Length: 185
Image (tube, rainbow, N blue to C red; front, side, top):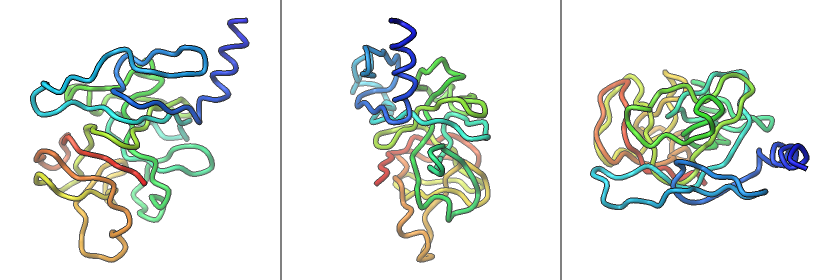
């Protein structure tokens, strides 16, 4: 019975969704729920939000990577056209024992190796990677065209208007983590 339940959960894992903070995730049958409550008193805000479980492609995914969906798997790239199907921000995965990262210190840890599973934040707050340019608070974010999986500031180029996926809540120097409010349509 346990093997059958595990098989059913694995078969549905690409489509499972839950809302809440994504730390200490607990599975109860076909449902995935958080086991810790949201703490609104945490200084600087607390990561959390709606997360989907996806299968990884051939890429090694890091916590904070911006990914897109293609052929039922998530990918990261420097090609902006791939992000027409943006999935969100990786917050955890197989390599993190399917636990979501909620600390700045855990940003850029390996979330999944090739063909693993990843938690992808679609709406909420998470740490993302600034590309080769720093970011100011309130900056609208789009996927980077110079660093795969990172974010950069939206420009006035018309191609970037429909790829805005959130905004920064803090400032960041180039290559550093920044807390962002993410909302993927």
